[in-house]
Length: 104
Image 1 (cartoon, rainbow, N blue to C red):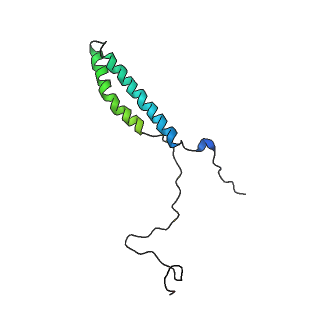
Image 2: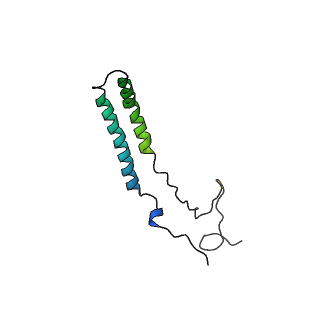
Image 3: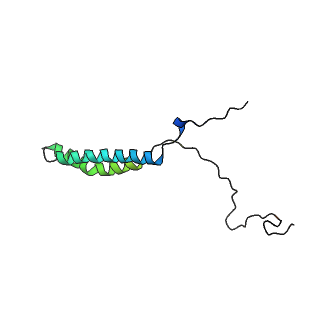
């Protein structure tokens, strides 16, 4: 008796809406940290100015990269259902009335 692997609700990939929401949260957190760095520039002195300034400049790039990386859950790919025909070669027609061709 052959066992087929059953689909489980926990093995399904994240829905696009949920993935988009989690990416927006990650982006918002990173940009919130950037705002704290910008506000911190008003209150610090010395080398902390350099640290917070670099963080405020670099964080938007990191925020975009983090937000654009989706979840790395592997999906399953299904093979295509049709047959491939090389470019420039007409598809093979079977004879008969339904295709309009002549039987050979």
